[in-house]
Image 1 (cartoon, rainbow, N blue to C red):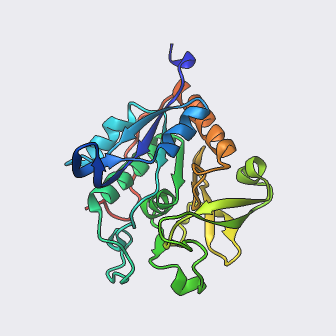
Image 2 (tube, helix red, strand yellow):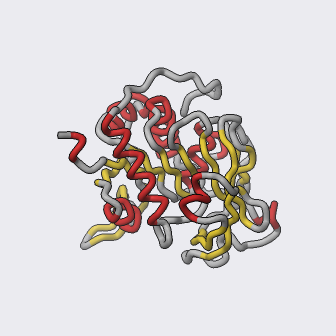
Image 3 (tube, rainbow, N blue to C red):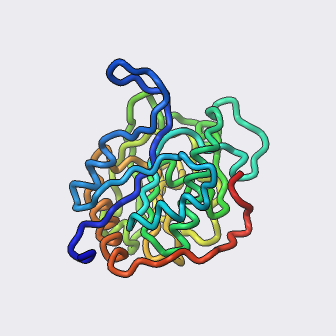
Length: 258
């Protein structure tokens, strides 16, 4: 029966103070645009909050129940996760519970060759999990605020995609995207290749070369114009569901989440 069922997509969540009904307390949450985008193209969204004493063991168990992993946006990745001991004044407070959980999910998912889509922070987590580093405050490098022009509101800019890539085939050689971030990829892991750039040179998309389907995008396709990307992601997850793999232990040579 599995072949006739829609694929289950694991979505990482925010962990934030939240007000709802008569309550005002910490909550695991996610903007509805993510789940709606997955459901619209035939996937079943399943939330994966960072509630695990042992993220490695929990990640292995959680991924047994899904066929694709979507890494959502959110808070800054802690710089200690990629070996930077000096915190920029603009870098947000550490969220090591979320960082460790999502890095464990990425490594286990890639070991299974499960489809992975990283969105904004999720693209950065995908890079860091494989040994990449980040720019902690992008305006220091590009001398503009175009990637987060107004606090609390998505900006827009163009992204150029490399010709002949899958992303260009789905989205065209250039696309107008929704953006909201002040951090970005600094150095990509050796196992990845950049496939999209903003006008200022910021890496906006990359693919993991030795995996069937593992892509990161710095923009927010769930906000608008992301149907083709989500459709291809869910399609790949459906194909994975027919022949799921069990994770083999992989040593990425960059230590474990703390």
